[in-house]
Length: 79
Image (cartoon, rainbow, N blue to C red; front, side, top):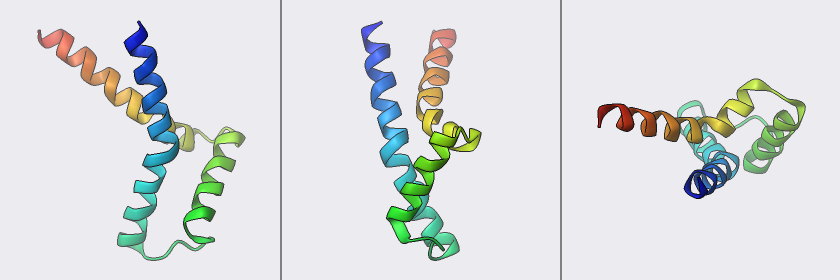
């Protein structure tokens, strides 16, 4: 149980801080410059959407933990 709580906190932190950075970098590389105020504008918009309850931004936040759970259950089934 303690491991699951630690993983939840670590992966939610990853989804809150690191994953938006990766999305910004990929977007910047593929589509060009972000039309807002750069990196900080992207982060502030992401946090505004989270606070507003936007489902897509919440999906970005919880996706690392969902991948962890799916992998955990898959390995448990295959064992």
